[in-house]
Length: 440
Ligand SMILES: Cc1ncc(COP(=O)(O)O)c(C=O)c1O
Image (cartoon, helix red, strand yellow):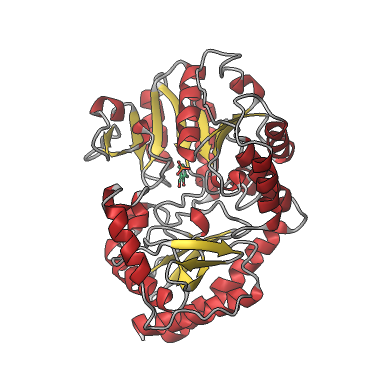
């Protein structure tokens, strides 16, 4: 573990502030993805300069234990040798060819040989592209146009998925972003999670028009909305009954809670899957996968068009192959879960003993801090927006103590293989101190 000092209460963000000022003249809001702007927690975003293992260093030279991990891809931590060496070798061999490469076969093989439900895969360049392409595939296979998503699930910035429930009992969506035509949004039905009756009624009504039900089986973009396995199985059963395809968006949960993601974790078979994050080892990658007869609808075999100049990029394939090879080692996921409990349990015990209103929900190595007394939070509507003020204060107190969380209380945290017991013990002490500072 590095001996660099952690930030004290006098720690500075002078360099980050300078860089942010410059960035604001260059990029909308100073960022290239909105949540990075610290809008939800206030203050200046930290400009990170480097990362090793569980730690990152900002432009002012301060070290943080990182639980953001690039929003999930870095399941081995930063600059893991098994990933870095593969990247270096791939870069030395040339960064892109626009032809098939052996590296695509390697990463594709690693995934298909060890995933219980994926038979064919197509690599793309982001999770958004994966979800978008999976939706097009489902529409192409079924010849139907409507899609159904759940309130509280995020599937990237795909037009048809930037949609929220309409008013009242109407299930037809309305767009959540300017620039998404209402006509597109109306092709998307939106339902609350954890409500099989609503799903059945909607499926009955739209069965002839509905191509696909899309869900994050472990919704992790609006808090961590852990679903009752009976609900997930119920979704599967209703899709079978009404002849609708089931899309598991495993961009976060895939290769995170088990190698085969939530599908393996819960033993539920999706028809189509979207992947991203971990499979690229920190490089830009996404993928969609399904049984062979479904994937055979994709061009050049079938009529569903989808292409990409940098799809299957060799550097990204090499990074992903390096990372997934580590994930396949025996006991990897059990150890991830064990160290996540080592982090969470003492923090919860401290909060409970001190009477602080904290709950931490976890699945595998994903965790989410909720300021609530609810035993289950299964829908985004069950999150109290006022509780976010607690998160903002805790976020600031943790930064002061050298712990970096994603800058929004709706975002989850990730434990990586590099968060060893010493790092976790240090983080636990920082959490206790931060909680005392906020609630004590
Ligand atoms: C479940 C899920 N699907 C899709 C996406 C979009 O992936 P990307 O940001 O790589 O486009 C994300 C991103 O966080 C996600 O969490």
